[in-house]
Amino acid sequence: MNKPVDTATLKALDRAHHLHPFTDLSGYARDGGRIISRAEHIYIYDSDGNRMLDGMSGLWCCNLGYSQPAIVEAVTRQLGELPYYNNFFRCSNQPAVELAAALVKVTSERFNHVFFTNSGSEANDTNIRLVHRYFDLLGKPQKKQIISRRNAYHGSTIAAASLGGMKAMHEQAIGLSYVHHINQPHCFELGGEHSPEDFGVAVARELEEKIDELGEDKVAAFIAEPVQGAGGVIVPPESYWPEIQRICDERDILFIADEVICGFGRTGRWFGSETYGIRPDLMTFAKAVTNGYMPLGGVMVSDKLADVLLASGGEFAHGLTYSGHPASCAAGLATLAIIEETGVIERAATALAPRLQSQLAALADHPIVGQVRGLGMFAAVELVRDKATRERLAPESEAAVYCRDWANAHGLMVRQTGDAMIMAPPLVSHPEEIDELIALLTRALDATAAHYGVRGS
Ligand code: PMP
Picture 1 (cartoon, protein in one colour):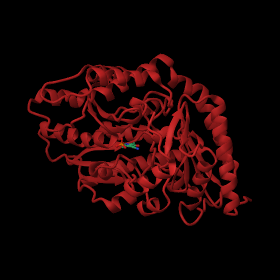
Picture 2 (cartoon, protein in one colour):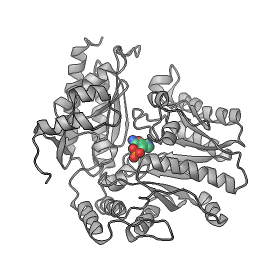
Picture 3 (spheres, rainbow, N blue to C red):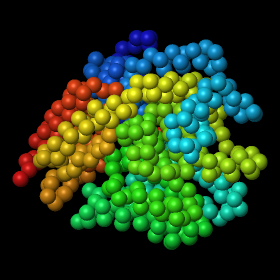
Picture 4 (cartoon, rainbow, N blue to C red):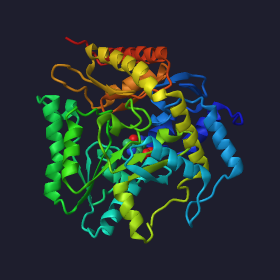
């Protein structure tokens, strides 16, 4: 147990000394936040004694909830035996080796190698390094350009933020000159009067147009999340991925699937790439690989790249002090073992996801809801002033922030992105806890509609 400190002191110290990520720093220094003091199953507790259903699985990572003693034991055992050693200088450690082999087993047969990092951001930086190295080794050093999508999230290092397409981040960080963005498959926002299927094909073809514009001989890779998570759980139309895959197959560019959120069961299969039948050359993972218990990320490297990298000789000049950290890898191994032994992904996909998605779909009739979208165990609810015209509530985001704050204050942790409420509950939730989530969300929507005078027609 942490040494008891009174909450007021802790909050004052937090406000005085702790700069929080993605936070209005002056607002936080003035008003502070809540101290999360413990967690159990899918509930988090703050130091004021409030209990909240965690509808976000932490930050999309605690897919197995907060009560997994086998992960704690594995990490504790590892810290006692070998707390640290690096994987440079021809050294390795048992958990890193075993986790690499375990990841190869649960991913597509194209993947037989792993590069470990501490986070998803670093893994995406690693992708750039791998892709550039690959084409250099093939004697195509001019292939350096990377195509991504607007409103994508790929992390917060300079390179990962640059790969991402978040406007607010690009305003604060100078993007890399060799990264370019095309539109996202966001039907509600961009689809206009198109059918979802037509829109999906049209927006996928922007990739082809961008390759032609930049020159196929200059483009190295395309990066995308199977379902954009932080951007607002943007579930693409069915026609989107087949068209993207066709373009990637026909062109000499690599396809990077960022599975940091989709990986390890969120979409109903182990990986979003499986759900959509796509065949990435590189696959980014992080978050749920350790159930959020320890920091760990990495890249699954397909044979297409690995064969070239391994055949070439010469050093791959990239690595991190904690690449393949033994305690993080022990957490990863224990997490994978739980997923495999309990069949939690299949159970969530068949017993929980339909319950979550059908109850959310029923909320489409709510006066303030413009669209409900979701897949597997995540979803978004788009708020509008007018359903028919899709008129947004003004000012942008304010109503969704109100709705999120209302939900948070009444025992439900959900998030807001733009005008959308987003949720990704743990895969170990019980069916009645899904009902509890929906009931609380419905009350939050009612309160928001009442506050903003939205009555429907
Ligand atoms: N890629 C995606 C798709 C993500 O959602 C995130 C984190 N939300 C990242 C990369 C970055 O991961 P990290 O925060 O571990 O650096």
